[in-house]
Image 1 (cartoon, rainbow, N blue to C red):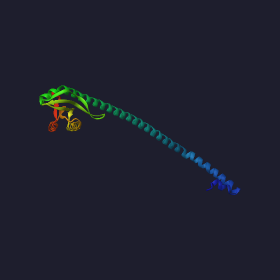
Image 2: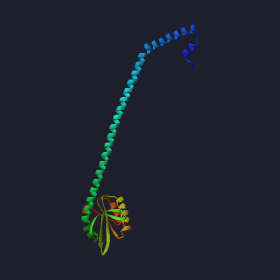
Image 3: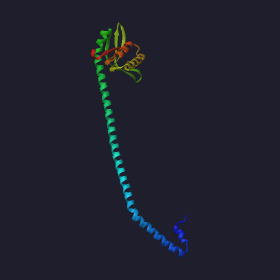
Image 4: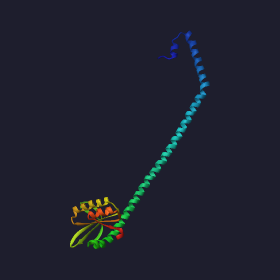
Amino acid sequence: MISYLEAIEQLPTEVKLPLMKAFELFKEEIAETVKKSDFDALKAVVGELAEAQRRTEQRIEELTEAQRRTEEVVRSLVISQGEMREQIGGLAHTVGYRLEDESFKALPALLKRDMDIKIIGRLKRDFIEIAHEKYLEVNIWGEARRDGREYVIVGEAKSQLKKKDVDDFIKLSDRIKKYITKDQIRILVTYNTSPQVQKYAKEKDIKIYFSYEF
């Protein structure tokens, strides 16, 4: 498609020159009209757009800063939660070890009194080797004798004894039984447990001792 200038160039000179003059006057008039009637309005619109963009950028900066602070708070909470979990875990281990330590001292006399069981050597925490470089950890372990028969003491300490703890202890004891076939005397030591758990343990031939008995 040819432009209007190319079309005019093809006209005769006597027509071309007046027409070119008319187009120039028309362009000037249009340009002048735009300058006078629309320039201020156009400038105002451009200003409003610039201001809107500035406000949008400010809001984005506020949102970015808020997101950054939120991420910092979340990161801090995650770190604090991890530290708290470690502290609680450490405290639980400390409580459990203390309960075990007290049981080592008290159980020989209690077992002698209640079941006429004599501890051979001493009770201790131990790892029972079941294969090469493979062990089972036992909270309370020792050897014992009653009526000329030898037994092994298998025990565990739980600050708050639950039915699941009893079931897990039974599984551990049964695994040990596969490798050390002596008859077992199974003991659980706790600060507290429910009557239902006490009854359940008794049905499984497990003796429960409470810390207040030590």
